[in-house]
Image (tube, rainbow, N blue to C red):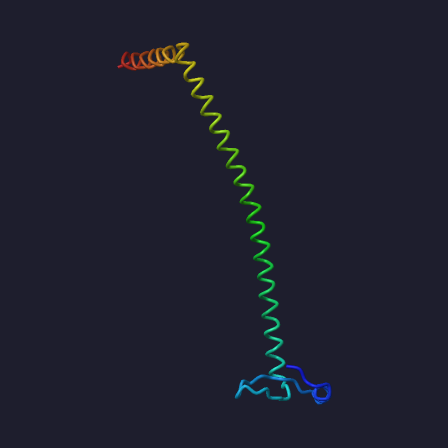
Length: 124
């Protein structure tokens, strides 16, 4: 709602401001008090606090997304390395069976075990 230039000039020169008191839906003109100005200043500070909180939230969200992307990339790399290692391990295990390494190792471990146990029995 706009005023005519004459009414607007009158309001400015007499330090009046508009306040909608919603009484019968009419706009009432009252002179602003210091309490109303303090309330306006308080709500302006609240708005600034809310804007600062939103800026911090946006910054934290951005940092979280960047860190999550880094961790996802590192996880994908680890999964890839694990698959490669498993494939190499299966291949080397198959080669060890084919070449007879495992029976030799089993025989060596059994002989060490038997030597230790016979030594312990002999001491009794």
